[in-house]
Image (spheres, rainbow, N blue to C red):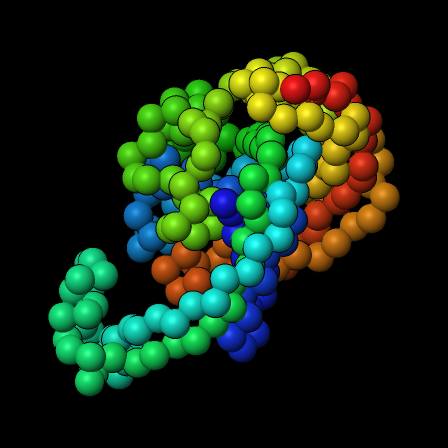
Length: 236
């Protein structure tokens, strides 16, 4: 299960059909052990790392209806801190606020992600990030805490002249998937506008997922390129 959050309006929390950049940077930050209040490091990662997603299968849309009890905003404004869900509920049911929401998910998606360094200012190398993703400091999840990865991540560091060739050098998808599923011979490719994809974009979108502050949950717009590309099919 995964949920790649879009702009949330009202009670309905939508999901995209492919990872947002903020979700990818969040995964990397969690793997490296960067806390949410370390805004400078999150912003630096977002600024100095380019991202691309190769979507073999966006997954089946699933909607869930939630009734959630949370501490009132006034309690949080007074500086109260809750480290666990148990701490939140300990203030008593009479003091809790109830939030109703519908949340969208993607069931069984198959997505490969490529990242590259735009400059040398970032304090982590691609090798550092690869090792961290293989043995993360914090628990990784795909957009929501209820969505841990269904398989261990398979980070690889490769050299390639383009994003598409980097995916090919990595084998397009983990071999274990060829034993489980059948995929078509094409996939949707999304990439940061400054990346060399090896193909031209069919469309250019503006997406609000460039991290400004992870702690305040604020983001800026980013241009994302898109094209459908032919790739060797994985036969189950």
